[in-house]
Image 1: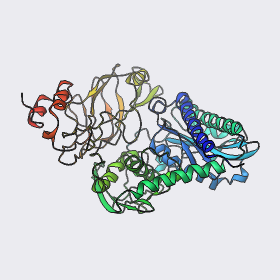
Image 2 (image 1 turned 60 degrees about the vertical axis):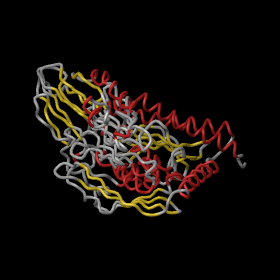
Image 3 (image 1 turned 180 degrees about the vertical axis):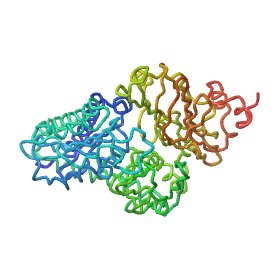
Image 4 (image 1 turned 180 degrees about the horizontal axis):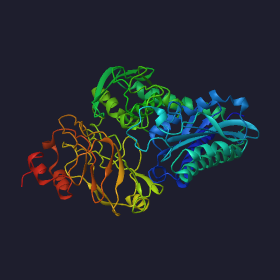
Length: 548
């Protein structure tokens, strides 16, 4: 039976509803705080060939666009004809669609009347997968915790308790980690149930015709947008703080009639440190940055992603090869939108923002619950905080916003309830937004201390300390980030350190760059910023030229 266009569109919308419910179930049942409070997850539905048809709005680009490749790897490992109803596949292979071992990916083949009709896939971040507690010290992937190849966690509906025991035995948080695995299994099953309900309602027995409509329509929508863009090649570069030395990134972006290609030749080689990036994660954030700048409003699926391609030399930091250390891959991967935008700013300057913080400023800690210390009674917790976005050529940048990750800032009250720590201060950091006709978004000023007379461990992984976000079109740079203790001791942005009893951690997340001449900013906007404490009186006078 051939489907009408109206039926196809209704079912396409239903697919989006299916995956959104799938993602919401994962978030509501997750044990990991970064998933439960900040939405660090992905959920999607795929056709029987492993092509993504829909993704949930709830989630992050690093998870979603990496996960888009994961089902294909599962099919390669376990041919479709060998799959049974009730099978569930698990892995956390960084090079097969997770990016690092803390992200666990599950794929569930979905059957309808005994026939495999598609797949539900999801992944999320677990707080502890074993390995080094000090996330800054690993030098190969084997130091970064339990490494799961593609395996069956459930066979025909029966959980593999031996595999679950292996996972439980290789984490400092066995209850939370196993709980997250069950959360992922459950959300995929909910997605499959809703997909089957839709097929029964519309009396269809396969997704093939719907899949072709979704993919072809989305691909054509992207190509139509590309047809209106200038054609050519533009180059961009970005310097990151790195750890022992700066990390240069380079890109060549080419817009042709058939698509947009980004080549990262010339970028830094792999490092012995752990912020190397698997190619799937490079693709994820490159594709996302193109989607935001060029293809807004077009649903993310196999068809809309296909015209966006990348290349990077094997062994460079953006195409790290196993067994490179990759647990901190987000420290570089999240910066890729600014690199891509440095290219696009030369092609379509009227729509591209100044540089942003891009990287997350997560607070990642570990310490004893009681005093005196008992090493067998440790908490491990993380709360996400963010910096400022760069200003667009027509609008101020957003403050304290998790662009491009999409990870939401977590409530400090939840963080405090899971630790012995208290957040004494958390507010927008005055003057941290880059000055301009349109001001960059502000970073945050955060202070954290212990409530018991004990030390605690702090794990840092930050960018934009030595190389703050640049402004555009005469705009000023965003404020540089910093990490210090209340005793004045300055800490590296990529390190693990002990916070002595009685001291506080003082965190200044970086701000976004401004766009345009600051003296061209409207006087009402300058006065408003001054009234709200977003800029100081000195900046209003000296930078923006506001008369008393």
